[in-house]
Length: 317
Ligand SMILES: [Mn+2]
Image 1 (cartoon, rainbow, N blue to C red):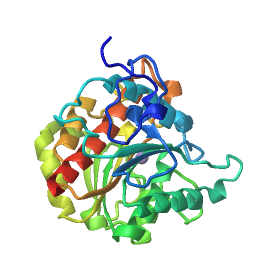
Image 2 (image 1 turned 30 degrees about the horizontal axis):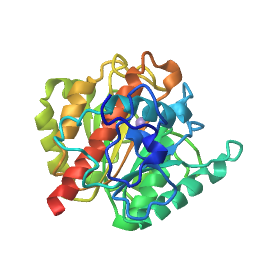
Image 3 (image 1 turned 90 degrees about the vertical axis):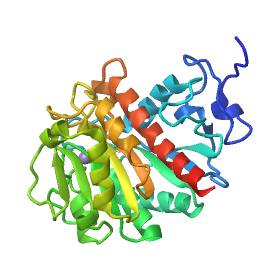
Image 4 (image 1 turned 180 degrees about the vertical axis):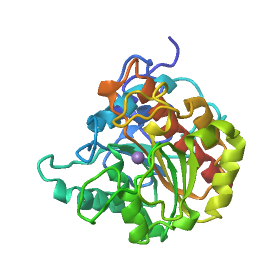
C-alpha cells in the first residue's frame, strides 16, 4: 500500500494537496477536501445546506449533503475524467461544512443562508453548494446576484419551479418565479433543461422538455445553453430530478421520462465556455436511494461543476 494517508479531511496541510485515503475509509468531506471554516485563500468552497422543509412531496433532502460527500469517496485515487488533471493542483478547495439552520424557525432560513453565502462570496471563492431541497437556490441566487448583478439561470430540472409565490412562502417549487419578479435572473437569458411537468408560468424562459432532450445530441444542448445565455454571468443549478428516476430514484419529486446521467454529464462537460459564477446540486434524498445511485450521480455532477471552474482558472493563468 504505497503512499496512502488517511483522514485528509482534517490532516491536509494545504488546500491543493491530493487525497490518498483508502476509498472505503477515512473522514468524509467532499472529495476529502480539508474541512475548515476559514475560506481565506480558497479558489473554491464546497458547502452543504441540510434543509428540506420546503419539499412538496417526499422529504429527506436534508441528508443530501452527507450522502453526496460520502459518495464522493468513489473518486479517490483516480484522476477525474474528463478534466485530465488533478482538479485541486491549481485550485485551492475547501469543504466549509454545513449551514446551521433552526428546524423550528423556517422564517429565518432564507436570510441565514443568504448571509452566510454572501460572506463566503466576499472571500472571492467560487461557491458550490450541496442541497437541500430546491428552495435553497433562492437565497443563493440573491447572494450571487448581489455580487455579480442579474444572472442567467441554467437549470437542470424536471420542474419549472415557477409555482405561486407571495414572497413569503417556503416552497421548493417557486424560487424561479421569485427570482424573475425580483430581477435577480434575466428570464430572456435563462434556460431550463429536462422539463417534464407544466407550471402556470414560464416568464419567457427557454424550456427544453424531456422529450426534446431525448432527441438532441449532448453537444448541441451544450451549444444551445451557451448561446442562449449570451455571455451573461450564469448560475448553474442541477436538481437531481432532472435525471430519469432510473438514474436518480433518491429524490423528492421524481418524474419518469428523463435523461440518463451519462447524457447530462456530457452536456455539463460541454459548458466550459459558460461564464459560471456559482452552482448547486439539490434534491438528493438518500432515504429513497438504492446502492447510492442518486448520491453518486449528485457527487459526479458536483465534481463536474468544480472541474468547469478549474478549467476556467487554468485559462485565466
Ligand atoms: Mn427543482
